[in-house]
Length: 84
Image (cartoon, rainbow, N blue to C red; front, side, top):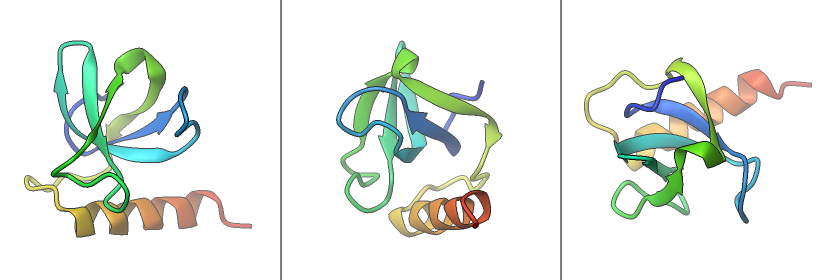
């Protein structure tokens, strides 16, 4: 599992269950998540690693994460994954 910056993560617990985020940073057993809209890079959500499902590889490989970049990548991921 990838817990580094730019990795996709799905929340498994809490009021944000089943929502997708991008990992901004990690610190010990915690990761900091942003979705670019409600949770920005400036104010990320702190969550324990055991409460998320992380992807195997980074979704965003850019060195600087911005809210616009996160929103765009999450939108593209959801569109490709949840197409009917």
